Structures are given as structure tokens and as C-alpha cells.
Length: 239
Length: 239
DNA sequence: GCGCCGAGTTATCAAATGTTAGCGCACTGT
DNA sequence: ACAGTGCGCTAACATTTGATAACTCGGCGC
Image 1: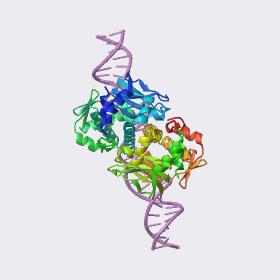
Image 2: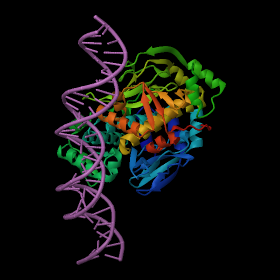
Image 3: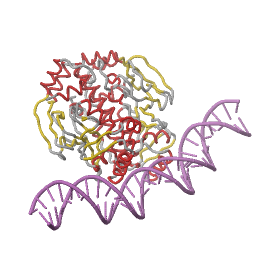
Image 4: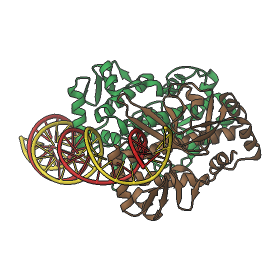
């Protein structure tokens, strides 16, 4: 059941059997959320962190004028709020974008891992660092890429991340978000989001229908996005 | 000499004398960089992480068309590349924006801290998590705030962070960046950056001359920025 | 003193992006 | 079958942002 977690953490360095069983012992208490429901509320102080087993979720902040900005997309194998273990107070919310099945990790147990399992601790730390690396890539995309390039970059990133946890189907992947939700990822109006999607479609590198994105020309998509996966740290080496 | 590091880490939870001496033992090898020099090169695999003792630095990425985007600003007491300890390969560069004095932390020593000092490890981890929280706030600012609000938010953030390490002077702080550099923070053209700065100046909440920003009306600045410092985790509690 | 140069500023025009409104289609519940 | 609803899509127009160019001013070397 924790396969995607093992795939996710194990892509960076090898996970010993003992570490796998520590993780198995850590995760307990499965829950489900419907699309649109908050998985973690902004301002709360959760006593556990949440791992996604199935579904798509996102972190977000809402501004005074009602505007919403997603700050990350979370897929199976991701801890959506591992940082809350040390940050304590959630400064943003986490919402289910599709029906989500999750499992919880008590902060007290996480703490005992940091006391007794230094290598596993480093791998969990690493997981949050990659989170940060993704944030940085998003900042660059928002600041200095064209909107089409930004969207292309997002698709590259999602495809590669989903591949690690075996959630791609050939060159396709399931993306259960509306254009309005995607607009809250890129920071655009819905109308302009639609224009950008049309442009990327018309360039012939992707198809997108029935909530399924198909990459028609990976080379060209990567080139439009200037996508370099280094930031995802997908090499296995001692950490 | 490590006062700003102690102030920075110590704002979140108390640092024992033993932890302070562990940190003292960790940091060795002072260096200096001139403004404009790379402190850490993109693509490198440093064997140590860098702490800023004095000066202003920034992380950045450069795109194919020559566009540059800063992804963070780093002040005294900040580790500019602590994540490289586990990420291994730098996916971006770190540049000195003013003359910088830094000191280094061998990754081998950092590793031994993770093996022997769990609480200090958690505090270092926390430091990188706050980094991520700042990234998220930047994403929100880039995506959904007006440019004036974004700039106001940046000034609020810098003021509060600089205050922690005692680098403010009343309601003023030293900000040795050109408008072109600031444009690479907000992701704007230089001309528009100038318009945004003028607008914030004209609203009377800040003054900015001789590389010194003075906050004239903190209440109003905070309001324009919708600034809520929760994300900086500036409360002292067990971590 | 003179001229060069970087930085800030402004003007003008072009391009990107937002706002408001409306249309059509698929899906849903009755 | 029917109306209601969410979503994708488009049009028309307003606003924001970018590109280019020019002007000022102060520092600095010669």
C-alpha cells in the first residue's frame, strides 16, 4: 500500500528493509476525501502529516479579494504537509482536487524516527528539499517564462513525477483539474488560461481531453519548457 | 561571529550551549566575495554549505534567452545552500549582491550532526522548511498579488527577517540592490519595476534612497501587502 | 575640466493579460 | 423530455506590462 512512498523516497537512495518497515509502522489511519474538500485546513496545527495514496491534491493560499493561488500539486507518494511536523502551524491549506485516499503519520512517531534513524531522517528531509526545489522552479516559471512555456514546464514536471510512481500510461497521464483550477496554478485569469492551453494544443505537442493529457512530442515539449529535471534529484546516490 | 546564526535558529526554539558549540565546531573557513561574484555555481556539487555572516546574496536561475530570476534573497544568518547537503547537485546559482563575508560547513560534519544531534538536526531541517515557506509566499505574490502589493510584501518580509538578526536601523534597512536586480526578483521589466516603485513611494508608505529603505507607515504597508508573518515561524516552541 | 558610464526616470507605442458577457455542449436530477 | 448547471470556448474592450529610446544626474578616470 505504501508502494508509491517507497518508489518516491527510493528513487533518491536505497531504502533498507528496516527503513521500509519503520515507514510501515509510521503510517497509520487511512482516510478519504472527496474532490473539493480540504485535507488540511489553513491555520490548523495538525498532530500528524498526510501521505497521498491515491488522487491529486494541492496546497493553496487565498487572498482577501478571493483570489486563490496553488503553490504545489501533490500526487501519490507525496507527503502533503510533512513540513508541518516542524513548522507546527499551517500557513496555507491543502485541498483534494480529485477523490483522495490518504494515510497519516503521527508527529510523535516522526520525531522518534529523527531520534533513531538518521538516514531515513535525511531521506524525509530530502523529500521536503525537493519540494523547495519545485517551488523555485515554479517561481522561475512565473517570473521569467512565457505562459505557454510555463504550462509546458508544468506538464513536463508532472509527467516525470508521475512516472516515478507509475501513474503514467504511455505518454499520457490523468489530470483531473478544470481550466479554472489550472489558472490558479499559473496565476492567470480563466480566459487567458484557455488561450494559453489553446496555443500549446495548436503547436501540436500535447493533447488534452477527458481529463487526460497526452504528450505528442516530448522533445518539443521539453524544448518549449526548457525543462531540465536536475531539480527533481532523480538520481540514486548516498544521501 | 556566529551571532546571526544563533539569532536565526534560536528564534524558533532554544539552542542549548552544547548545540551552540556543535555549530561553532561545524562552521570553518571564512571567505569573502565581491558584489556580483558567484558564491556557489549552478551545476556544481559543493562539499560544504555556506552561511552568510555579512552581506546580501541571492539564489537565481538564468534562462536560455538570458532572463534571470531570483528565487530568494539571503541575509546574514542564512544558509544559502544548506539543501545542497542532501540535494548534492546545485540546480541554480548563488550570487553576492553586495560584498559578502561567509563561513563554510563541511557536509561530512553536517552528516555527523544528523547522526548524533537529532534536535539540532530538526532545527536545521526547520531552517530549510522556512525557506520553502518563503518560496510559497513568493509564488502567491507572483501569481495573485498586484505588483505594488508584491513589492510591499517583499519589503515587509525583508524588514521582519532583518530585524531578527539585528540588521535594521529603526524603521530602515539597508538594501544594496539596483532596480534592475529588484526586477529580477519580481519578474518584471526594469521600466515597469520603476513604475511600481514610484507608485509605492507616492503612496507615502516607504522611502528609498541611497540603498536604504525606510518604512514610513508600517500599518499601511502591511495592509497593502496583506502581510501575515505566520509563514516565518517566528515563535519559540519545542521543535 | 572633460567625457564616459551606470543607474534612475519618463515618454511612446506595442503586446500581453484581464474583465465582462455570452454561447454551446455534456451531464445531472426530476 | 426538460431545465439547470458546470465547464470549455470566444468576442470585444479595458488595463497592465513590455520594448525601445531618450534624457538626466552623479561618480569616476583621464
